[in-house]
Image (cartoon, one colour):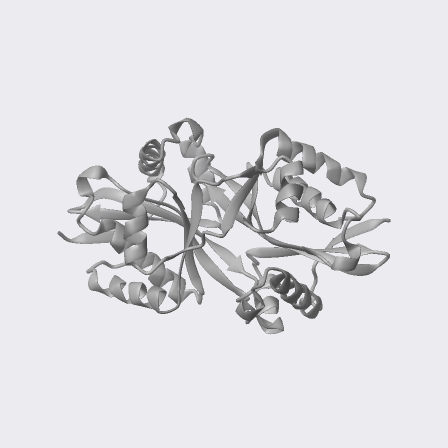
Length: 167
Length: 167
């Protein structure tokens, strides 16, 4: 099966949003999806975008996507490539579409002098973990992601005003 | 004690690199630091930088820094603020410099319509974990960071050429 990978272009918002929804459902996180086509248009297709998406197709039909941005390592002094989402439709799985997307991302990382390709994986997602291990990925188990959002983020932001600086 | 926060400017490379080294030593990862002042100059002070740094000062003397960039949530359709490094010198700890930096970051996140402020923490760094919990941060324990680097990254990038696409 021939796989083709292309960059997402304006007009792909509905497709990307559909894939995001399907990925969220697989991750049992569908209730967290509030993104709209307009949100994707504004961020993916901004004048100077900070995020990028690839679409993988088989026989001209989209069957998955990857969304990424550039992160950074202060230890390396170099950017890395961070994979936010990777998704292949159930019908297309097992034919190498996910690996093709990851290989393309690895090449984009090398072409941009990135020292690393990184992503997060859910602890219970055994098929994904096995797949990533087969590629030589290292699980950074001693690190935990922390997140501040909602009222806690707003409360902390409000405390910034207490400091008499000029920033 | 009055704390002042300012953006890092060209000329701060040596200072930032010193702080990165001290943070790495604290994290028992000093052997991983290969960044140079030139690397920091090229990436922090690029024409269109993707990373940003804040310096915190007390009585005009730098006592810590934060380095951040904008990540993304496909579920929210919005950018987030990702804190790569947060460091305060041992002498300055306990006076609120770390919290002042985090409050500034939270405000920058709000000002940029970010839905989240995120970072990683080492599992054994109990003081940091307690500090982050006190701010209302959520530990995303079911997620594990995966990293592909070195030969494994190069091997995967080389596989991209096997696909007959035009990307």
